[in-house]
Length: 82
Image (cartoon, rainbow, N blue to C red):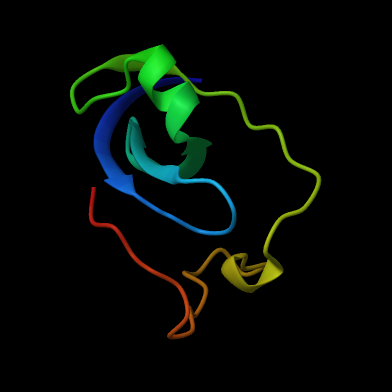
């Protein structure tokens, strides 16, 4: 999916430093996490055009809604306005 990078922020979680990357895909937003090494290799920065590929083995069901309405988020989730 073609996307524009809107945000690149530190997301140090776990053993290695990660980056939170906020993407805009038309009217939709996507928050991705990549390693700092990959972010630097890809030159990720606000304004950069990228192609997003969703590759996962698990999705956090708390952020999904069957009714099409916005799902409730708990206090543990960090929200980025992109």
